[in-house]
Amino acid sequence: MRIGVVTFPGTLDDRDAQRAVRLAGGEPVALWHADTNLHTVDAVVLPGGFSFGDYLRCGAIAAQAPVMESIIKAAAGSLPVLGICNGFQVLVESHLLPGGLIRNDVQTFVCRDQKLVVENVDTPWTNEFTLGQEITIPLKNGEGGYIADAETLKRLEGEGLVAFRYKDFNPNGSMNDIAGLRNERGNVVGLMPHPEHAVEAGFGPDTSAAMRSGVDGLKFFTSVIKSLVEA
Amino acid sequence: MPKIIVEVMPKADLLDPAGKAVNSALHRNGHSEIANVRIGKRIELHFDRAVTEADIAAATKIGEEFLSNAVIEDVVSVTIEN
Image 1: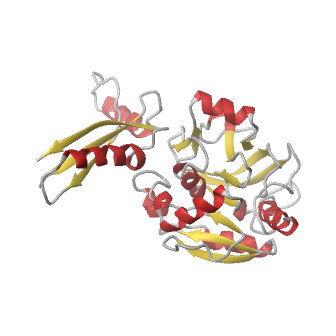
Image 2: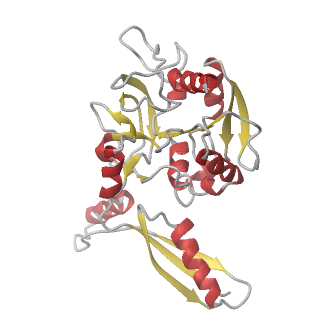
Image 3: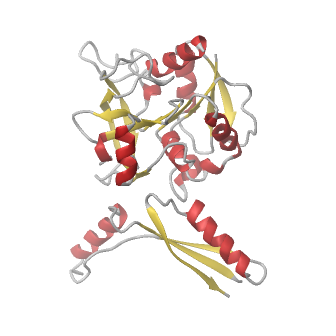
């Protein structure tokens, strides 16, 4: 399965995302922000970083990139799209997911191993989790506070579109402890924490079993490959 | 040079951490008369010719759709400076 990983100028975690795809058994395909076609990929990851230096607003300029025009069109079909951190910001700026992300309420950059609850498993990116499962993956952002108006929040909760929620500790003031969302169809998922940094023992978060042994992030990538194989 | 100036502010009911930090610094420096600080953006669109009504309409649309994000910000003014 060919999983595209987009690199914008200022993207940081594209190589990590490519590596995560490879460890999950997929074939990573590098996509450049100026690409106008998606090179027959089966899914797309928008990785973390500081695209276009976070100028204007995080993700705002990236949302206008040529590659996004193709991704927005394909996402309206059934292309699975995962936005991680800055990628999540690109998704909200592209209106593929509702709401916005603002500066953390603590006014500092936050970097920690973050516990999450999986709130929705009916997406190509989460189908290998169990509903209510607790996972731990790294979180690292300055502008991760999720906000939306009351009506949007009500719709998100009512329609089960919250995909991940912060557990025990809300690191950035996100409304309703929202860490990640899915769209109505389920093919588009965005979250602030970084699954691609928890895919290989020795390099992930600490667990009760051993230091840096956490690999909860790998399931995002095995999920999408599974859903593509079954499709 | 003729310009259109678009000003964008964070929504009034949202926390503006940058404004809050500046406000705290001002208070430390004795400016307790300042109740609050909010920080927005001024964006200048420059033209090589006179600005037309159509340019203002276009700038307003650009302001609402790209220069600001309606979820978190408001365009507070679109003005011409010749």
